[in-house]
Image (tube, rainbow, N blue to C red; front, side):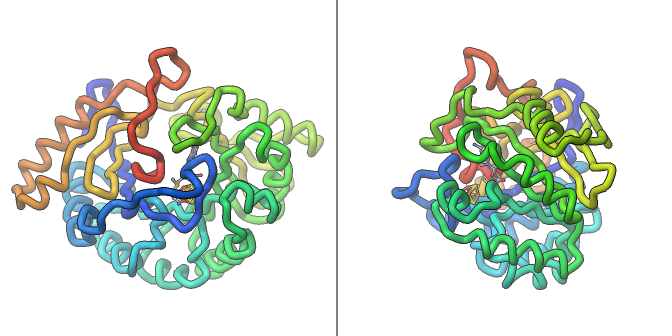
Length: 328
Ligand code: SAM
Ligand code: SF4
């Protein structure tokens, strides 16, 4: 088991498989000038498979494939197939901007992907284009329909809410969760993008989002899990199909219960999204080190996992890499 010095168990690994993306969400990347990693820097599918197997032997049972945009990596379904073949992996999920789902959902489902989170910050085509700098809302909505047809469930929609940008849409999203079997998760805006213009005033705390929805829709949300041991507080409607979740990483950080670690697309282990320290696993893999050596290095890095992020404290310093480079 991977235990840290604060007695938390890491059983959940996020792997970024590329830093590239076909969108340019304004809170994540600048419009122009992104410099991508050389492809040789990226872990190959064989290297990822070996690393995930090693992590699984250390107790990791949940994997999320992310990026950048993971569906931009060639034949990603073959990676899904390799990872879903590992017996100890009980939950294999992906976070995507949804653009390629129309073409790839069937292959992903057949390869054994269990769950998908689709990022969608606006239901209005003009606003969507303003946020992502791409006119692709229709593609993402089609992608959502396609994954439902493939039976990949539950479908989660991640919406980053930014005050003054898309906070006027929280009730529209709530209505979507009432009408369709989606889990809409409202994510607080975090200081991790590149040129993202973050300041605490732009964060819409979950509590405020919830109050707005209840006021605007004139109804009470029913808690399913509130301040439990999961990162998302979950609510349902008395008369709805889907669910609403709140991820309050800024207003109510979840660090105390954090069970996650991450691997960047160039093979660095990060024990927190906001870490200032990385452990180079690619070097060990490419040096063909023994499993036991790699396990010992991973074990030590996890043991030294930071207690929590310091977003709300004066000493907070942004990590050097952005979310798209680390893997969101
Ligand atoms: N490209 C894929 C996508 O957008 O779903 C996967 C990578 S993206 C970095 C993963 C998630 O991070 C997305 O849901 C995105 O909205 C979220 N994200 C990126 N920057 C963020 C920020 N500054 N604050 C909160 N969430 C952020
Ligand atoms: Fe791309 Fe995802 Fe970042 Fe948007 S949030 S620019 S889709 S990596």
